[in-house]
Image: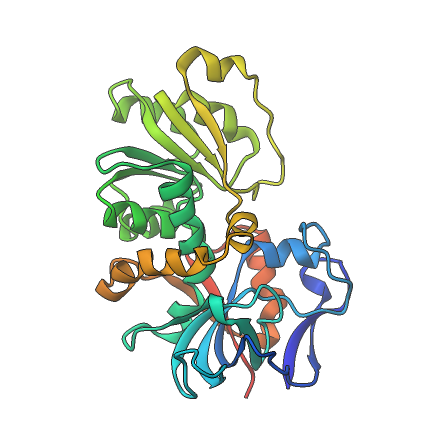
Length: 323
């Protein structure tokens, strides 16, 4: 079968098409005919050898897919032809992929395969961030950085669905419409966001900040927090890992909270299923429906990673296997 494979750890340019044998599922895995594969920021880091998971080249990236079941374990509840979304962790940029039974989820008929492939990583991450790490309450106000990207749009939809209010931070005027469509109550530009948040909250600040960006925004994000506010650290797409003077936390009783969803979920039996069940009503109602920025053939996987690297993505990119 055809795959998009990382041959060298040189970034997006190291991704090439290749022919490999079809995977053989173990007794607790589901074999999936891949209709679409999501492209996530960890895939970019993997292409550079910068992710915590460091498989030796050549290897196939891709942690989330959607498609139809080819085979499944007996008594699994899945049958050939069932529409599913799944977490593969690796090997998703392929015509067929295997996923653990615990990480395979039914996909409603009105959710496209492209949308299905864009669901798992981002929506499971924000559900973990807000429900478990932030203990978010209805009516709270949340500042969302990177609001036009995959994590950002998922967060905005989730907040709207859960009855919280959001202020979206975007880098350019053209991204305002993306954040608004995803459910943002207000949208501000990254340049000067601290003053804008102060004005929008009458000086009080926000209850939480979701930050997948890091870099030089971090300190001003802390300053945007209301008393007992929480800053949720998801990643560092800006490249720089910020530091914090802990006296800032003491003075206003605020917290910096790490959000490493994958580390927790993979080590906690049953948690992924619990998460999907929590998200399912929103997916079925249409409240949680990822905006797909582009559907590219798998042969253009390197271009998809470049778009992520250059922060051009407004929503989520998915790859379509070659036929």
